[in-house]
Length: 87
Image (cartoon, rainbow, N blue to C red):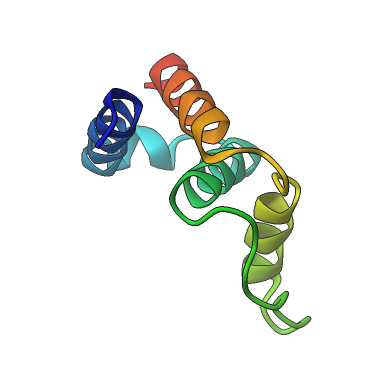
Protein backbone atom coordinates (compact mmCIF):
# COMPACT_ATOMS: atom_id res chain seq x y z
CA UNK A 1 0.00 0.00 0.00
CA UNK A 2 1.43 3.37 -0.99
CA UNK A 3 1.83 6.24 1.42
CA UNK A 4 -1.04 8.10 -0.31
CA UNK A 5 -3.31 5.06 0.05
CA UNK A 6 -2.44 4.83 3.75
CA UNK A 7 -3.20 8.54 4.23
CA UNK A 8 -6.47 8.12 2.33
CA UNK A 9 -7.53 5.14 4.46
CA UNK A 10 -6.63 6.97 7.68
CA UNK A 11 -8.65 10.00 6.56
CA UNK A 12 -11.61 7.82 5.53
CA UNK A 13 -11.56 6.26 9.02
CA UNK A 14 -11.46 9.74 10.55
CA UNK A 15 -14.48 10.77 8.46
CA UNK A 16 -16.42 7.70 9.62
CA UNK A 17 -15.67 8.61 13.23
CA UNK A 18 -16.84 12.19 12.66
CA UNK A 19 -20.47 11.42 11.90
CA UNK A 20 -21.76 14.43 13.85
CA UNK A 21 -19.52 16.89 12.01
CA UNK A 22 -20.33 15.26 8.69
CA UNK A 23 -24.05 15.48 9.40
CA UNK A 24 -23.78 19.25 9.76
CA UNK A 25 -22.36 19.66 6.23
CA UNK A 26 -24.44 20.81 3.28
CA UNK A 27 -25.71 18.17 0.88
CA UNK A 28 -23.36 19.56 -1.80
CA UNK A 29 -20.31 19.02 0.44
CA UNK A 30 -21.49 15.53 1.36
CA UNK A 31 -21.87 14.69 -2.34
CA UNK A 32 -18.41 16.08 -3.06
CA UNK A 33 -16.89 13.90 -0.32
CA UNK A 34 -18.88 10.87 -1.50
CA UNK A 35 -17.84 11.31 -5.12
CA UNK A 36 -14.17 11.67 -4.23
CA UNK A 37 -14.35 8.59 -2.00
CA UNK A 38 -16.00 6.50 -4.72
CA UNK A 39 -13.59 7.70 -7.41
CA UNK A 40 -10.66 6.92 -5.08
CA UNK A 41 -11.85 3.48 -4.06
CA UNK A 42 -13.62 2.26 -7.21
CA UNK A 43 -12.60 4.47 -10.12
CA UNK A 44 -15.04 5.60 -12.79
CA UNK A 45 -18.76 4.86 -12.35
CA UNK A 46 -19.41 1.18 -13.05
CA UNK A 47 -23.13 0.95 -12.32
CA UNK A 48 -26.25 2.20 -14.07
CA UNK A 49 -27.82 5.49 -13.01
CA UNK A 50 -30.70 4.95 -10.57
CA UNK A 51 -34.21 5.72 -11.76
CA UNK A 52 -36.49 8.60 -10.88
CA UNK A 53 -37.79 6.74 -7.82
CA UNK A 54 -34.37 7.12 -6.17
CA UNK A 55 -33.50 10.85 -6.17
CA UNK A 56 -30.79 10.42 -3.52
CA UNK A 57 -29.16 7.61 -5.49
CA UNK A 58 -29.33 9.71 -8.67
CA UNK A 59 -27.65 12.66 -6.94
CA UNK A 60 -24.88 10.41 -5.64
CA UNK A 61 -24.42 8.77 -9.05
CA UNK A 62 -24.33 12.17 -10.81
CA UNK A 63 -21.71 13.49 -8.36
CA UNK A 64 -19.56 10.39 -8.84
CA UNK A 65 -20.00 10.42 -12.62
CA UNK A 66 -18.81 14.05 -12.71
CA UNK A 67 -15.41 12.70 -11.53
CA UNK A 68 -15.10 10.38 -14.54
CA UNK A 69 -11.53 10.36 -15.83
CA UNK A 70 -10.00 11.58 -12.55
CA UNK A 71 -7.21 9.25 -11.48
CA UNK A 72 -7.55 7.40 -8.20
CA UNK A 73 -4.46 9.21 -6.92
CA UNK A 74 -5.85 12.65 -7.76
CA UNK A 75 -9.17 11.75 -6.15
CA UNK A 76 -7.45 10.44 -3.01
CA UNK A 77 -5.45 13.63 -2.59
CA UNK A 78 -8.53 15.79 -3.21
CA UNK A 79 -10.49 13.72 -0.65
CA UNK A 80 -7.73 14.11 1.94
CA UNK A 81 -7.45 17.87 1.32
CA UNK A 82 -11.21 18.50 1.39
CA UNK A 83 -11.94 16.45 4.49
CA UNK A 84 -8.97 17.97 6.33
CA UNK A 85 -10.40 21.40 5.54
CA UNK A 86 -13.91 20.47 6.71
CA UNK A 87 -13.12 18.49 9.86
